[in-house]
Image (cartoon, rainbow, N blue to C red; front, side, top):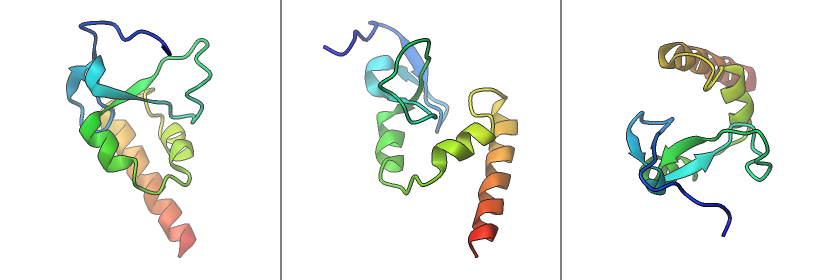
Amino acid sequence: MFGSRRDGETVTCIACGEERPRSDAREYDKHGDRWDRRDKTFEFLCKGCFTETCRQPRDGLEATLAAADAGETDRATFLRQFRELVRERSVERE
């Protein structure tokens, strides 16, 4: 239909860090353009994390993830940078 999912492929959930079969995960594109697939690799959310996060407000989420170097740096550095950016943006809104 929209592309084949490779049997036996595993992916790592960007939210919880667990490895899951590709068939038990959802694609996530931090740039918000999942339909343009040319030269692109996707990150993944397991179904549980996808369900938990997809109902949350997303205003500015992709920009914050990109600014925190999601997928470009190690997990600890990303989490620190993400936390700092979220704090800065919440102070700006007050």
